[in-house]
Length: 157
Picture 1: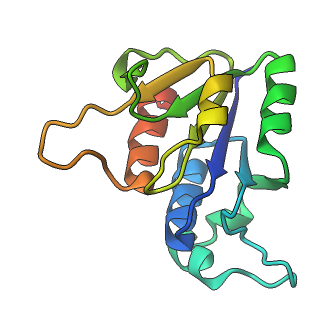
Picture 2: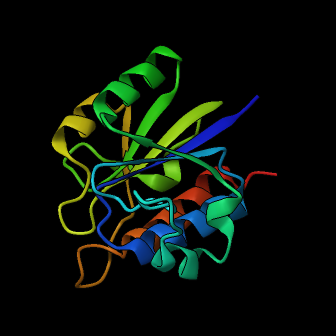
Protein backbone atom coordinates (compact mmCIF):
# COMPACT_ATOMS: atom_id res chain seq x y z
CA UNK A 1 0.00 0.00 0.00
CA UNK A 2 1.35 3.41 -0.95
CA UNK A 3 1.71 6.04 1.73
CA UNK A 4 2.50 9.69 0.94
CA UNK A 5 3.55 12.31 3.48
CA UNK A 6 4.16 16.01 2.87
CA UNK A 7 6.45 17.93 5.23
CA UNK A 8 6.16 21.72 5.46
CA UNK A 9 9.19 23.07 7.30
CA UNK A 10 9.61 26.76 8.18
CA UNK A 11 7.01 28.00 5.71
CA UNK A 12 6.46 31.64 6.65
CA UNK A 13 3.25 32.33 4.70
CA UNK A 14 0.02 30.91 6.09
CA UNK A 15 -1.53 31.41 2.63
CA UNK A 16 1.13 29.12 1.14
CA UNK A 17 0.39 26.55 3.85
CA UNK A 18 -3.31 26.67 2.99
CA UNK A 19 -2.62 26.32 -0.72
CA UNK A 20 -0.44 23.27 -0.06
CA UNK A 21 -3.16 21.71 2.12
CA UNK A 22 -5.58 22.20 -0.76
CA UNK A 23 -3.22 20.55 -3.24
CA UNK A 24 -2.43 17.74 -0.79
CA UNK A 25 -6.12 16.98 -0.40
CA UNK A 26 -6.65 17.03 -4.17
CA UNK A 27 -3.88 14.48 -4.79
CA UNK A 28 -4.77 12.41 -1.68
CA UNK A 29 -1.68 12.94 0.45
CA UNK A 30 -2.07 10.75 3.54
CA UNK A 31 -0.57 13.15 6.06
CA UNK A 32 1.02 16.57 6.36
CA UNK A 33 3.73 17.13 8.96
CA UNK A 34 4.20 20.75 9.98
CA UNK A 35 7.45 21.79 11.61
CA UNK A 36 9.53 24.79 12.57
CA UNK A 37 7.61 28.04 12.49
CA UNK A 38 5.13 26.87 9.84
CA UNK A 39 1.61 27.94 10.81
CA UNK A 40 -0.80 25.18 11.81
CA UNK A 41 -4.48 25.04 10.82
CA UNK A 42 -5.28 25.34 14.53
CA UNK A 43 -3.36 27.98 16.48
CA UNK A 44 -1.97 27.53 19.99
CA UNK A 45 -5.27 28.77 21.44
CA UNK A 46 -7.32 26.14 19.59
CA UNK A 47 -8.69 28.59 17.03
CA UNK A 48 -8.77 28.14 13.26
CA UNK A 49 -5.92 29.94 11.50
CA UNK A 50 -7.95 32.21 9.20
CA UNK A 51 -5.27 32.71 6.54
CA UNK A 52 -4.81 28.96 6.12
CA UNK A 53 -8.56 28.38 6.07
CA UNK A 54 -9.07 31.07 3.44
CA UNK A 55 -6.67 29.51 0.92
CA UNK A 56 -7.26 25.85 1.88
CA UNK A 57 -11.06 26.13 1.49
CA UNK A 58 -11.72 23.37 4.01
CA UNK A 59 -8.91 21.03 2.91
CA UNK A 60 -7.13 21.72 6.21
CA UNK A 61 -9.96 19.77 7.87
CA UNK A 62 -9.77 16.90 5.37
CA UNK A 63 -6.07 16.02 5.42
CA UNK A 64 -4.54 14.40 8.50
CA UNK A 65 -1.81 16.60 9.92
CA UNK A 66 0.42 16.86 12.93
CA UNK A 67 3.07 19.17 14.28
CA UNK A 68 6.61 17.88 14.75
CA UNK A 69 8.57 19.68 17.44
CA UNK A 70 11.81 18.09 16.19
CA UNK A 71 11.73 17.43 12.46
CA UNK A 72 15.13 15.70 12.46
CA UNK A 73 13.91 13.09 14.96
CA UNK A 74 10.67 12.69 12.99
CA UNK A 75 12.56 12.13 9.73
CA UNK A 76 14.89 9.61 11.38
CA UNK A 77 11.82 7.71 12.62
CA UNK A 78 10.31 7.78 9.12
CA UNK A 79 13.57 6.50 7.62
CA UNK A 80 13.50 3.63 10.16
CA UNK A 81 9.97 2.89 8.89
CA UNK A 82 11.48 2.61 5.37
CA UNK A 83 10.17 5.91 4.00
CA UNK A 84 12.06 7.48 1.09
CA UNK A 85 12.88 11.07 2.11
CA UNK A 86 12.74 13.50 -0.81
CA UNK A 87 13.57 17.21 -0.59
CA UNK A 88 12.44 19.71 -3.20
CA UNK A 89 15.43 22.02 -3.45
CA UNK A 90 18.02 23.33 -5.90
CA UNK A 91 21.45 22.02 -4.93
CA UNK A 92 24.54 20.78 -6.75
CA UNK A 93 23.26 17.23 -6.11
CA UNK A 94 19.62 17.72 -7.08
CA UNK A 95 18.08 16.01 -10.10
CA UNK A 96 15.21 17.00 -12.36
CA UNK A 97 11.92 16.16 -10.63
CA UNK A 98 10.64 14.49 -13.81
CA UNK A 99 13.05 11.57 -13.48
CA UNK A 100 12.25 10.77 -9.83
CA UNK A 101 10.13 7.64 -9.38
CA UNK A 102 8.37 7.58 -6.00
CA UNK A 103 8.52 4.50 -3.84
CA UNK A 104 5.57 3.02 -1.95
CA UNK A 105 6.43 5.04 1.17
CA UNK A 106 7.43 8.56 0.20
CA UNK A 107 8.03 11.79 2.16
CA UNK A 108 8.16 15.05 0.19
CA UNK A 109 9.73 18.01 2.00
CA UNK A 110 9.07 21.65 1.14
CA UNK A 111 11.16 24.33 2.81
CA UNK A 112 11.23 28.03 3.49
CA UNK A 113 10.23 30.44 0.73
CA UNK A 114 13.59 32.24 0.77
CA UNK A 115 16.13 29.93 2.43
CA UNK A 116 14.78 26.64 1.06
CA UNK A 117 15.18 23.30 2.83
CA UNK A 118 17.51 23.42 5.84
CA UNK A 119 20.94 21.83 5.38
CA UNK A 120 20.45 19.29 8.20
CA UNK A 121 17.28 18.06 6.48
CA UNK A 122 19.03 17.85 3.10
CA UNK A 123 21.71 15.70 4.73
CA UNK A 124 19.05 13.20 5.88
CA UNK A 125 17.33 13.00 2.51
CA UNK A 126 17.52 10.04 0.16
CA UNK A 127 16.82 12.17 -2.91
CA UNK A 128 16.87 15.86 -3.76
CA UNK A 129 14.76 16.94 -6.70
CA UNK A 130 14.36 20.31 -8.37
CA UNK A 131 12.22 22.02 -10.94
CA UNK A 132 14.43 23.30 -13.76
CA UNK A 133 14.20 27.05 -14.23
CA UNK A 134 14.51 28.42 -17.77
CA UNK A 135 13.71 32.10 -17.19
CA UNK A 136 15.45 34.86 -15.29
CA UNK A 137 13.96 33.93 -11.89
CA UNK A 138 15.74 31.27 -9.85
CA UNK A 139 12.66 29.69 -8.29
CA UNK A 140 8.87 29.44 -8.14
CA UNK A 141 6.56 30.13 -5.21
CA UNK A 142 6.76 27.21 -2.75
CA UNK A 143 3.05 26.39 -3.07
CA UNK A 144 3.31 26.40 -6.87
CA UNK A 145 6.37 24.14 -6.76
CA UNK A 146 4.59 21.84 -4.32
CA UNK A 147 1.60 21.49 -6.64
CA UNK A 148 3.76 20.69 -9.66
CA UNK A 149 5.83 18.11 -7.78
CA UNK A 150 2.91 16.37 -6.07
CA UNK A 151 0.96 15.97 -9.28
CA UNK A 152 4.01 14.80 -11.23
CA UNK A 153 4.91 12.19 -8.61
CA UNK A 154 1.52 10.94 -7.51
CA UNK A 155 -0.95 11.42 -10.38
CA UNK A 156 -0.37 7.92 -11.74
CA UNK A 157 -3.74 6.25 -12.16
